[in-house]
Length: 254
Image 1 (cartoon, rainbow, N blue to C red):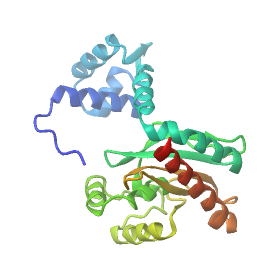
Image 2 (image 1 turned 60 degrees about the vertical axis):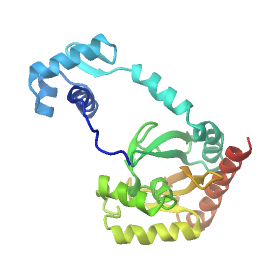
Image 3 (image 1 turned 180 degrees about the vertical axis):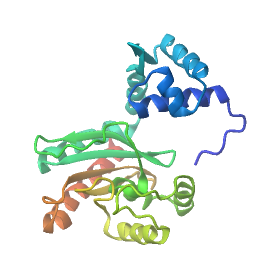
């Protein structure tokens, strides 16, 4: 886990606070954003003006929004992640073969980040997208990663982010989470039973390097009315674990 910055730069933190505020509000004027952040209007205006001048935000009729220039940096970061280029074909195949939503997730700074999603025309639509960050404990994808991380690392992540409740089904107790992580290690896959999105179930398997380092996880998600019986307990888990194994082999020998 990253430690506290030894000499934090206040202006840099303020810049990202302003950007986070714009994202949370889905665009805002100076007054609205200043109120939302409890920061002086003059300060907010100075930062927004600079960000617009540097082409990181756009302004339309007094409303500032996050600019698409960030896509260039996100695409660059994703393209340099080996697991993305190797896993993408398998994630797409999973979606096509199962008729469901498939995802690739990695861990960064103790949170899960969606790197790719495969969508079949029959798949349910959810509000997560590439780049979305989630708590690891609330998703099958995240739990399959936690199950493969060293215990001190898991404890550090939980100390930093806690176990916030996302839905009524989210695990919020450390002992309960520890027991579930042990089950995941034994069976080879993780289950999300409406823990991140109500009405949605998910099966995930970790992607582990030849040296034992967890690189990410792959999953298939679907509505509860479809994900039930042996389809949920056998068919989908087998497909997901097979995909994870293929990705691991390709990472090792390609």
